[in-house]
Image (cartoon, rainbow, N blue to C red):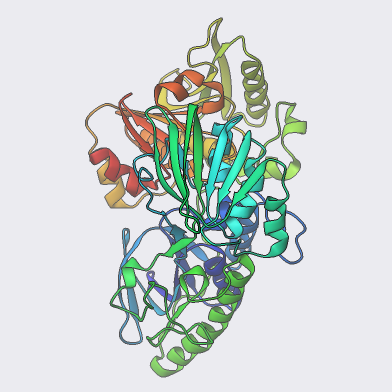
Length: 540
C-alpha cells in the first residue's frame, strides 16, 4: 500500500525531524508532513550556541543536518498541509492538501507560530515597520532606532543581534525583569547600544511611509511616553508563540491555552497518537527539549506500532530512500574561480542537478557598471564552467542603475523561461536558484495533479517580483514556489531581486520586511508562502 505508513509525523521542526530519524533507523516506514518549510522556528535563528556538542551553528544548518540523517535511513518528506484527522481504530487517516495518507501511529509536532501582542497599529504595519524575524529584516533598519517588544530568551538574544544594524535598541519588558536565563539577559542589559525598560508595554505605533510614532506605558508608574521621529524606526516583536493546534481542536485533549496534553511518554488522549516539541505543555521550549521529545515519542511509537503489527498482521512497506528532486543546500562564497567558489562536495551535489536536467539552458546576463555586476559575471562564469548543460551570454551593459545586474534563465535559442535573478544568487538563494534551473530545464520538482491543474488554469499575465535578502531563511520557500509556477506556465514570470542592490524598488514598495512579493507592479504581500498558498493568493 503506497499510502500506508507505520507513522505519519505532522510537523518538520526539530521534534518531528528527530522522531523521523529514530523511526526510520529502526526500520519503520515514516512520512513527515510539513506545510511550509522543514526546520521549524529555529531555522530562522542566526546563531545557535547552546546545542550540546556543537560549538556554534545556524538553526537552518542544524535542522538540515537532522533531515539529511533521517533521509539517509529512508524517512520520506512531503510539503503538504494536514487539514483533518480520522484517529479511531488501528489505521488512522491524515487528510492533507495533497490527498489522504494512512498510518498506524501519528506524531503531532506542529510547533508554534510567533504571537502578536495586539497593540494598536501592529497588524496594519506588519512588513512596513513591524517585524518578527531579526535575521530576515534587521538590515532594513541599519542606522535607525529599533524597539523590541518582549522579555524572553528571543527578545534578549535577538536584541543583541539587532545592534549590528541599529543605531540603538530599546527593549520593552512587560514584567519587572527578563524571564530567560541570567547569562542571556545580562548580555542585553550590559550592551552599550541597548536600553532596557521594565514594566513597560507598547500601546500604539503609526506612520505613513514607515513608523514615525510610538506610544508606550510604564505599568508600574502609569507614565506614558510618546516617541516621535522625523525618520522611520522599527519595532520587532518577540512575545512568544501560539501552538499550532487548529487542526486538532475537538479531536484530542488541549489545555486552555491550546497546547496538547500528553503524559510522561508524550502520549495524547488518543491511543496511537503522540505529540512532541513546542506544541506540548512544557516548562522549557528549546531545540534540545524538542529533539528529546521527538526521540522519546519515536521510541514509544516503535512499541505501539509493533503491537499493531502483531495484532492485525498488517505491515507498511519497508522504508527505502526515495528518488527525489535533487537537493542543494550549500552556500557559496563571494566571487572566485570554480575551484575556489565550489568545494568538491558542492560540485558533487551540483553534478547531480546537472545530470537530471532534460535540456540545456542559456544564462543571459544584463550588467551595469556597479561592482555587483562584476561579481555576478564571475559567479555565473564559474557556475557555467561546471557543466555543458549551461552556457552564458552577456546581453549588454548599462551605465545607469535600472534593474541590473540580472541573470535571465533562457532556452538555448534565447527564449525566456520566465525566471530571472537580479543581483548575485548566493547565500540562501543559491539553493533556490539551482532549483529554478532544474525546474526550467525539466523535469523539475514533482507536483501533484491538483497543483498542476491550478497552475495551468492561470490565463492572465502575472508578473511576480520577489524581493529578498541573501540572509533570509524564509525567502527561498517563496522563491522556489514562484519559480515552479513560472516554469510551468508561460503566462507567469518570476523575477527575484536582492533588495540590497535595488534601492528604488525598496522605496517604491516601502519594503521593510522580506520576503516581499509584488504582483503586476501593484498588489503587495509580505511573508513566506508555499506553492499552494501562493496559488491561493494569486487566485484571490
